[in-house]
Amino acid sequence: MDHQPDDGRPGSSGPAVGAHAALSRLVGDVDDFAASTWARGPLLRPSADPGGFDDLLTAGAVDELLSERGLRTPFLRVAKAGSTHPTNAFTSPGGVGAGIADQVSDDKLTALFAGGSTIVLQALHRVWPPIIEFCQQLAADLGHPVQANAYVTPPQNQGFDDHYDVHDVFVLQIAGRKRWSIHAPVLPSPLRDQPWTDHRDDVRRAAEAEPVIDAVLEPGDTLYLPRGYLHSATALGGVTIHLTLGVHSWTRYAVAEELAALALRRLADREEARASLPLGTGLAPDDIDADLVAKLLRDALDSLDPGEVAGSLRARRRGTQRAAPIGPLAQHDFAASLSDETVVRLREHVDATLVDATITSRVASIAVEHAPADAVRRLLAGEPVVVADLGQDVARRMIEAGLVVRG
Image (cartoon, rainbow, N blue to C red; front, side):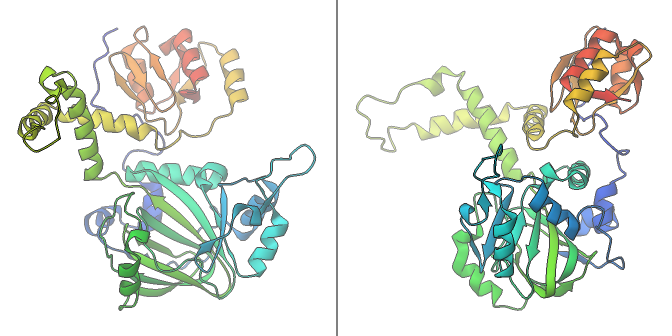
């Protein structure tokens, strides 16, 4: 079979490309958001439906997570007046047969919450099925990794002082009312190693200025903030819950990092670059051959193919998200019951590509040189495929690796 390298685009992993179901739910007109708002400025989108996000999270769901799901750190943190409580303030062993000491204690949480502490449920994109599915689709719509935290704040309390995040955020108001104060950045588009704590004085002064947005979010409302925008929120009247979707944007700096890493790998093959500096060097300007090394580095950068850089970044991307959940036992039974008439489909959000007769994805790399090219291409396009078209051996390997699921 003659498999030609594809153009690097992932196979289908959800609704049709361009549907943007998750993103349009948050921002409305996706094209307008992309052209005028994304990474440029905040967006407040009120809703007429106070139960608009009940399918993602409710107060009852929060109680279930805290009291019945056996959560452990770091899936929870608790804060008051801008300071985070130590882990042992809200955890305890789980009793006979579950003596792990860092399990969330609903008793301790009840007391802390009554005393004015904010509860932060972290990484809900890993533990709560509706949010897992939504975040995976949102990440596919955006092209950038997404995480989810929920903030549960007691009446008339402010969980955290004015600060900025090093990722974009979508704030989804779930319950209660919360006043948000948004100020312009002191450091626009900060990188992940440029936290607000490095600019405390600037943040404090900027927070005293006129806000860009000063508004009360009601249940169902959405707020988008690019990274760097200062914000603080205060609960009004009763308990409030909001869901924060953090978007960890790919940046030009990330491209520069990849260019530098690939160029350095090229330099390792050049004897001139590997050469030792002079004996007894004091690392003075005349000793380090900076001009020569810079030229070698520029030559290495100039020799890089943009396709190679993009491919390397895509390989990094695969590690930033997870594929759609599957049941190991169900997959085992599926593989055991396979027949030529069985229908399979690509598992959602595996980020699969075909290069040189090998499917590479988040979950596995599968050689498909003996499978018909048309069947492989249809599978990667998101179409259901019968096992007879792929061959039972290839299909079984795909199932056992978690690459495909029942169609």
